Image (cartoon, rainbow, N blue to C red; front, side):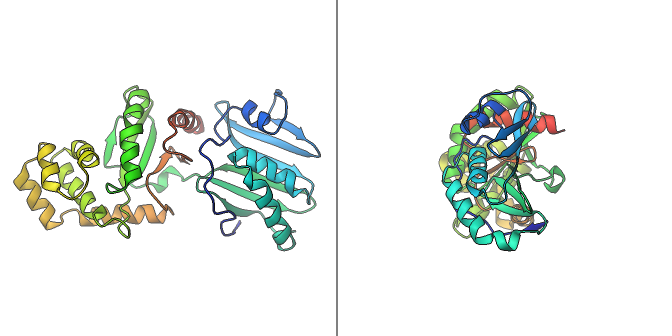
Length: 301
């Protein structure tokens, strides 16, 4: 399968139809609820692939030059109306070199992927970005023991990560972690090019982990902010002399660098980036989406 560069450089809205019941997707296209997973959309046909009753992938087959209709299906899947015109324009420009070729993979925002093939008909599929779980490195900082992993790639200096810690993590614990539905993994992704303290903070947190206090230190850093790690260590109840020695030696530099390399190998571009099972979450602040993606991840197993 050939890969093309990203089609559109805009943020896909948070509330995509992927992971919702089929009725929501059909309603977006103005189609009535109907049994089964294959539906007629004008001269085209749609097949909805589901996991535990939630839309997982959308497959479209239609006329080779009806780019607007195909764009409507993509837009409904990711709930981004601006995709319709962007897709039609891009296809008019690129159809000659796509015609007769094998399937191509096209970037679609940050959490969805599009594959298409143009012959006597136009075939395309839209689904979530997925990473095989074997591609994730070993988990070091875990809350809970549920069967589905919620993996956050995070940076202690990132204000958006602090927001997730403040607004989302407590509810995740209450709904999914303590109830045994999922476990939560913190993974370092220090954005050192824009955050001066990102790597020092990550290394300091590993020194706290050495004393079995990663999560206490994690909470303290997101509350107090980065910089004064001795103060954070004291607030987390650590042995200060042991912590100072560990931090001064940069004892866990290699571990943090390995975590950074993992995030870069996965092609991550910012923080917080969250995976639920193999699925990249479109919006890590959408609490309701976690439950749906947990269901899909469990069904996929």
